[in-house]
Image 1 (cartoon, rainbow, N blue to C red):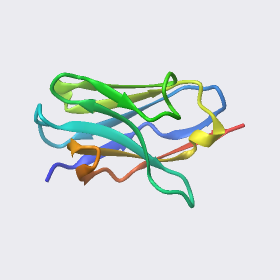
Image 2: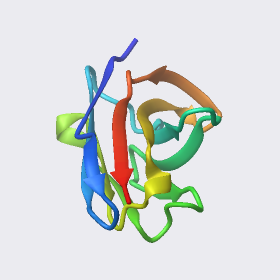
Image 3: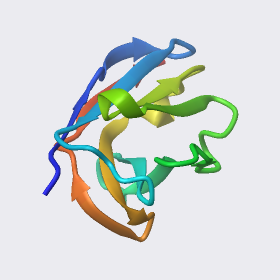
Image 4: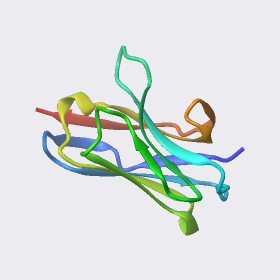
Length: 118
């Protein structure tokens, strides 16, 4: 099973930017997608963004559209999440995931904390 390792979380102020990275321990097949989810304390896990590993098509959750950008580097087996105009409500643990669809995730990272202060 592929291992996923996130990095790049931290404490920032509102309107700041942050870039998360997720590196997979093995090559991701072109029929798979990689995605970011997040979970705030006391809340359910929320879909943030996803990218098709083969063609690079992307999808975003409504709360981050226009502010976050997902991208990938196939050669490095690495996915990124560029987060701009951060808001306090973006505070959460961000998880990297890989699967055949958003509803069929087969591997999760350990999570990285993002805290946005007002």
